[in-house]
Image (tube, rainbow, N blue to C red; front, side, top):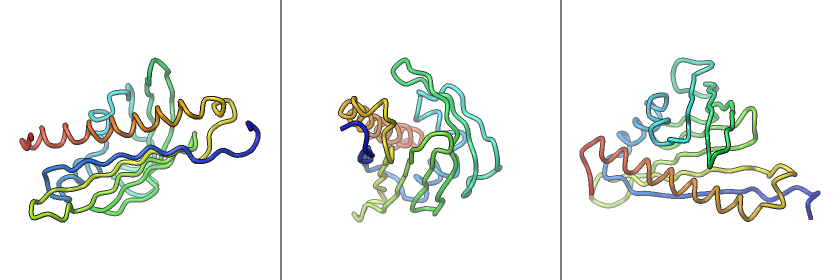
Length: 160
């Protein structure tokens, strides 16, 4: 039970933001260095390691405190496709974060933002706690989507 590979642990959440896709992508993608710690308050230290603009291969480091647990990781931009998608991959730890931007399809200029966080495989020591990890990852995805929604709409003056 604890020795084979585990299934990926994935948390996914979507929100509709009352702004056009280009504006939402600019906030998340082009202004990532400034805004990421704002929508992810668990980040206590964030720094750019390599690269000056958001592009595939840009390398960053973060220190986070999640539920009292301090962690440090290095990650890079693995996909940058304005205004549709931006993905990050952990370099020091195996994880992926994906932000996808879709036009809402209604007459309003709204954007559906989908955030996905994935551990491709759980570390051996976490496998006995897989259900708890899955719940925590989904809660984190929901919180990230809500934080982005509130921050982007309040900053633009579009509060619902």
